Picture 1 (tube, rainbow, N blue to C red):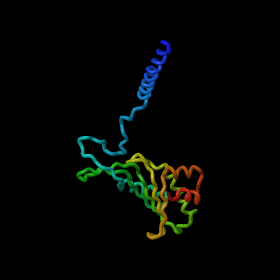
Picture 2: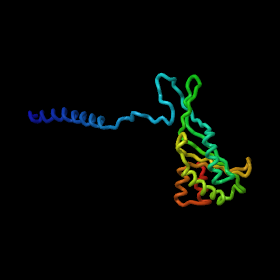
Picture 3: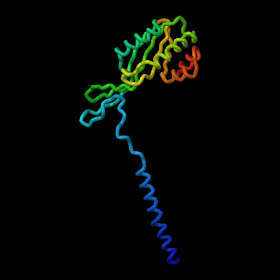
Picture 4: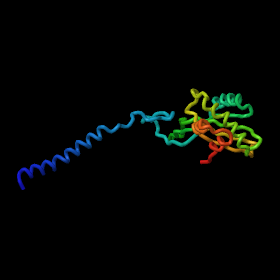
Length: 190
């Protein structure tokens, strides 16, 4: 083996690992770092001075918002009643104290009807509700407006629930779905 060959082999054995080290160091340096601020969803920030907590799904009635929503809803559909609640998480501490953090605001709507199987009539209500809900003022809500719990009822024992996310309702409405077709689209059971 010649001297030149020895230098070439030595250069390869030392040069390739050095290039790999430089390459991986560069890759690591250019990776995005984790965000410095973690979203809180309305919950208090974690603080080492406070007690740790466990999170559980929770909901909380919003009586004042519900009263205002009900009044606005009855201008559109006089026989309807509405309410509001927030869905989110409770931070439950070791001492039993709780702090609620809202993740979304949901509306409930009850509408009396004559026939639960008249999809055209029920869909006509949805035709009125979707634009109304899409334009509803949300500044005073504790979190984004998301789910709509709609209950058509003949009596307390005879009812039909249609539960949908407002975004899905708006999308179906904007696709041109109306009446029974709109109802069928939003009444899909998951």
